[in-house]
Amino acid sequence: MPQVRAGVISFPGSNGDHDAVSALEQDLGIQVRRVDYRETELSEFDAVVLPGGFSYGDALRCGAIARFSPVMEPLRAFADEGKPVLGICNGFQILCEAHLLPGALLRNQTLKFHCFWTTIRIEQSNTPWTSSLEVGDVLRLPVAHGEGAYYIEEHRLTELERNGQIVARYATDAGDVTESANRNRSVASIAAVCNDRCNVVGIMPHPERATNELIGGSDGLRLLNGILDGALAAGRSR
Amino acid sequence: MPKQGVNDPHGDAVMAGLRSLSFDGTQRVRVGKLIRIEVQADSEDDALDQGTRMCERLLANPVIEEFVVSAAQIG
Image 1: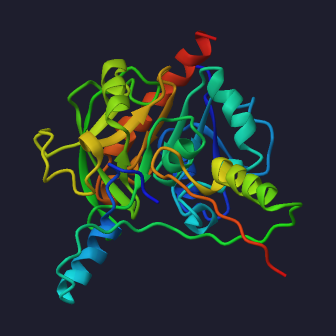
Image 2 (image 1 turned 180 degrees about the vertical axis):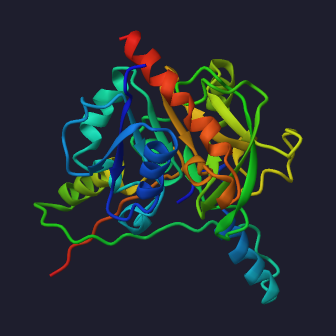
């Protein structure tokens, strides 16, 4: 199998970049390079990850400043080519601010920082990042966010549902999408979405922080694993 | 300001605070941001125009926020 190469972008204030590198490199055996936010070339990669953290201290809005980093221009071109991009937590917020993903992330309804294990149900397996999963699969992943409540206008929500752009929803351990499982009060319990081509995915929980039973769970690997086949499939379709 | 229909838990918390202080007539609270910017401008219209472009490009997220720009001369 050809070697998959992934880039993990470090913005000022990213803190999940090392976790993402370690998950991809050590747990999946993918060749990974950490990419500085000032870089302007991403063509060496098969997939790119925007990690979690607090880029620019969340000034103004989460992701609002990072969106104008030099690296975002080649990232847009990378995404336009149909190559796989994954935004985790703050990475998700940055992709929304950059309009590479629909919607926005609002303050959690509780006004508290949410830092606990959560359960999501996979709703779309036709993305490079969820290609090793099936619709209905239930994953246990940690969250760590203050602004994690997904929001999108009602008419656009209908569009997302119609296009199959909802990738995962918060659910109970049994996989039921209930109000009590939706602790940050995201619209339609949305935990992850994708763009209309399905190659750009944003997810609020942290798969890269659930890669080993020693740290509480390994379901994150089940998701990230998809990129091994997903990146190659995306490469073939180019 | 958060757009109509956008959940504003900050506003809800402030309303609960006001009600607990017996401001019983409080109907609704929305919390937004005030950003004061000093610019070099030829006229008030020019300043308004610069402010509007700043909001569109960076300061406001049109998915969740709406904005109003006003200008006044200083110095």
